[in-house]
Image (tube, rainbow, N blue to C red):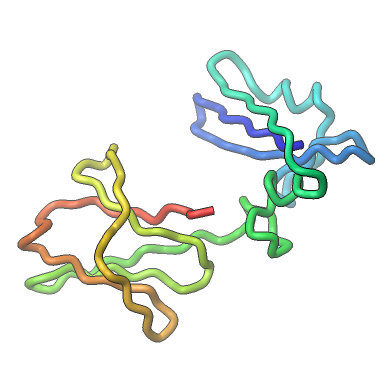
Length: 148
């Protein structure tokens, strides 16, 4: 079973895997101790969102804490850093090949709506990259979003 909680006040998300043998909820980061259901529910208050989700047998840990099944908890995986450099005619956006699973998105305002980048991406020397024409898109915001 998977449990996901969203703490609205802090804009935090956390996922937990219910371990039937220990009857504890294990977090999606190695830095948090396993918790009982009461301890887990005590973390949330009015306005927070809680979701319990059944998963196929044997898939709970992958759904709740290690989506890419690489042995590293989801919140412990490093985030890709987006680098933007400007030339006179274009902006170049780059991010490292590792960690994988990141998709560039753009928006006209910082609050969105966010849309996938449709320009072709190139890969070279350990980096993903694409160039954005400053004439076609003079003011855009960019971010990387996990695809898993």
